Image 1 (cartoon, rainbow, N blue to C red):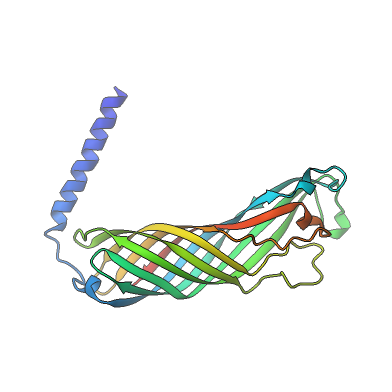
Image 2: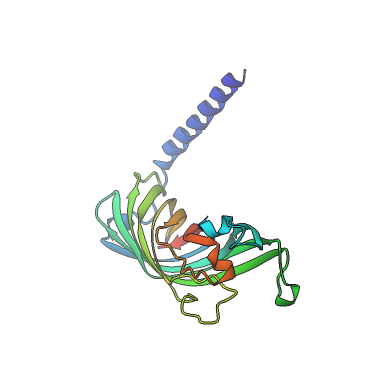
Length: 244
């Protein structure tokens, strides 16, 4: 019975899509020459959710070297993206896009479950160490687009990105209570989105995932919160709107 119901739902969805595609052929096209232009530009605004992917250092498992930290977890938070888009059109389906001015404001944190803590120093059983970042990024993405159906297109992107954290704490000297991170990172990212064509502009919502490849951790064995962590890699999921 459930199998028949699923088949009916799939049939209805496919029928609706075919009907909408048929109607789209009779819709007046907005900006019919937009995709034939060699270059076009846009403004991008989005939200991101970022966190750290990390590994524990062998010191964490040593009862002699680590006698106060029981659990380490990465906490994610919401930030914002601001960017300027430059798009180079190759043909009907392929584009190369970059964001020469791309600022990402994000905040990540480590949460420590402590077995020994000092309330006078601001510690508690659950102690958080926040890492705020203002990242200047330069992504280079290859975009593949579907055929245009009326005033709608679907596209995917894939490429790489270089990041420089303007708020990096790697050079701070008084860092006993911090986790020191290097400013440079490089990553791969991919996404999926839609182009909605309006009479005077194109609106493009996009969902993108970013995987940092560089070990950001500037580990120092004498720092309490840093010594128990080995590798740290950045991860980010973002949703953005671009007006072209």
